[in-house]
Amino acid sequence: MTAAAQRLPEILEDADNGLNPSVRVLFARLHEQVQALDAQIADSDQAIKQAVHSDERCQRLQSMDGIGPLIATALVAAVGDAQTFSNGRQLAAWLGLVPRQHSSGGKPTLLGISKRGDRYLRTLLIHGARAVIYRVKDASSRRALWLKQLIERRGINRATVALANKMARIAGLAGPR
Image (cartoon, rainbow, N blue to C red):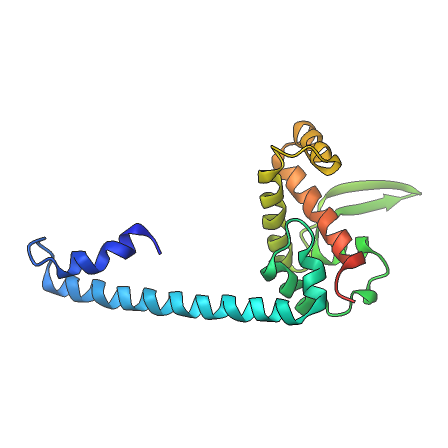
C-alpha cells in the first residue's frame, strides 16, 4: 500500500483539513475499494503460491533465474506438455521471442523479433529477464559476463529480449513435461 493510502484514514478523520464532505465520502469509498482489491490480490498471490508448491513442473521452472511463481504457473498453464515442441527454439518461436526469418535461395536472412505468439507470456519472460539483468551488475558468473558483453554490444533492451529468448529455450527443455 502506498504512503498516501496508508495516511488516507487519518486525513479523512481530520475535520479541520478543509475537505468538502462529499469529497470526504468519495475518498472513503475509494479507500474501501482499494482495501478490497488489496485483499483480492493477496488471495490470488496465495493461490498461485499453493499451485507452485503442489506442482513439480512449476518448482522446476522456478529454479531458473528470472522465473518466479507467476511466470512458472503461466508457462505450465499455457504450454501444458512441453514435449509438443521438438526443441526449445520452437517454444521461443511460439512465444514470439525469435527473429523472423526470410530465406530465399538457401540464404537465410534474420529480421527483427517477430512479436507473434503469446503476448502475455512473452511480456512476463521479458520482465523476468529485466530482473536478472538488473542484478547482473555485481555478478561474475559466465552468464553474467555474457550478459555484460551483450549489453555493451547491443544495448540493454536487445540484451533483455535475448535473455528472455534464452530463458524460453531452457524452459522448453527443462520445463513442464
